[in-house]
Amino acid sequence: MKRRRETVVITGASAGVGRATARAFAKRGARLGLIARGHAGLEAALRDVEQLGGEAISLPVDVAHADQVESAAEQVEEQFGPIDIWINNAMVSVFSPLREMTADEYHRVTEVTYLGSVYGTMAALKRMLPRDRGMIVQVGSALAYRGIPLQSAYCGAKHALQGFTESLRAELIHDKSHVKITMVQMPALNTPQFSWVKSRLPHKAQPVPPVYQPEVAAEAIVWAAHHYRREWNVGLSTSIVVEGNKLLPGVGDFYLGQTGYESQQHDGFEDPNRPNNLNAPVDEERDFGAHGKFDNIARMKSRQLWMEQHRGLVAVAGALVGCALLSRVACRS
View 1 (spheres, rainbow, N blue to C red):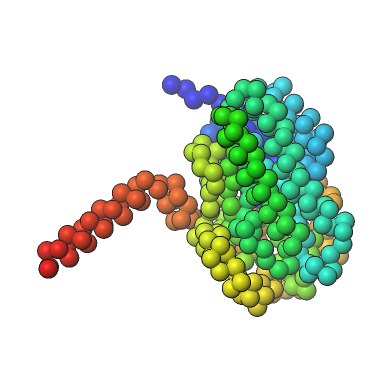
View 2 (spheres, rainbow, N blue to C red):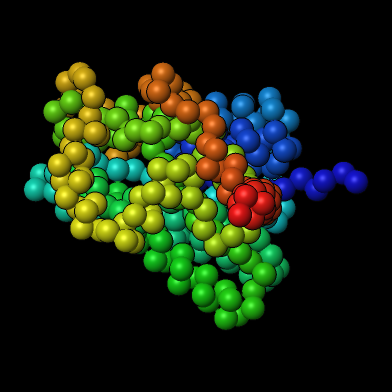
């Protein structure tokens, strides 16, 4: 039977994880509402989708404004019909010690990275709840569980999103709703954000290794949208951070206090006057694409993600290996 074409909304769709996710859904023939601020990036994302077999509408929206997000949702449903999947991915950040941050910077990071996801969720639920179906995917981070130095605004926003998502999930369960919400916790990714993030670091910002390509994140998001689980970790490093922080948070404090500054910077002095995307897009005239500058160290696959996707198979294989070992031991005794 011919598969029904899904209607999917992606925020932050012009670059990085959002761009890679748009391409991944396009390969499935999806109809996509692409939300972002930058004109060049949005139009390039739209062309990507169409070339890969999907359909798309580009929506120049700042997710910090709830009315703009709501209007975008209306336009998507007018164009493509009921929204099946909503992906909250848009984010901004500031790389800076807290002592040099401003109140306006905290406000801006919070209203985009946290409240933008809240507004997206509200717009999705307004349409999904009456139909009693739909999936909302929150693009999270290992930093939703473990704060690191120099990114206090971003870490705070992702922690807030984690708590919001848990609260909403419990409400959906109480209401016996068939609408689902999941959160995909990401590792360090090779995206353009390190070229345009606002930074006060003396050296150029980098993702903390190990680094994965945005296509790994996109694969996880598409999978999570179709295979419900309350939460997904992507990359072994994410699982180590999340689980390790539960067991030994004080060790994490000390370790990151000693290494967290150096690991987020690499050779080359940063230009403090370069454009950044905190308050305005930097891709109005130039398309940055999905990848950042770290292709040489970024991984295209995650074995951990494959194992998460095939837990049953892994469990059976583990049981068979265990039985074989026990049999061998019994034969020797």
